[in-house]
Image (cartoon, rainbow, N blue to C red; front, side, top):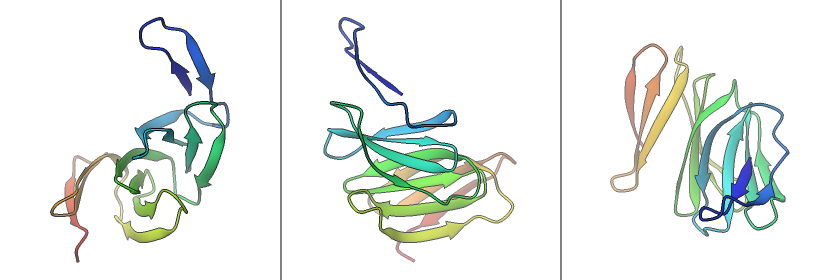
Length: 131
């Protein structure tokens, strides 16, 4: 993953800790760090110097989708798992298992708290995070 100056095109920093294609990326709420999904993990790193802050691991399959809302994030994998976690300490808030579904995309609505996922099989699922 690389950070460029939008005006000049100058490379500002390069993050090289991924060992698989980067399939999803999102800014953290602080605007100073980025979450990027590659392989079966989500990397959290500083934009300024491209240094890794932490990593969320253990997904079944590649992480294909990622969204950030305030201080938490949601990531969905090809193995059908959706993980909702705190960005700062990576603490898992909840995990949803979508059986027999390869998840390719997701959207997150803060109020009411819902996640919408899109699957390889054409399924669109809406998950209520209040229940």
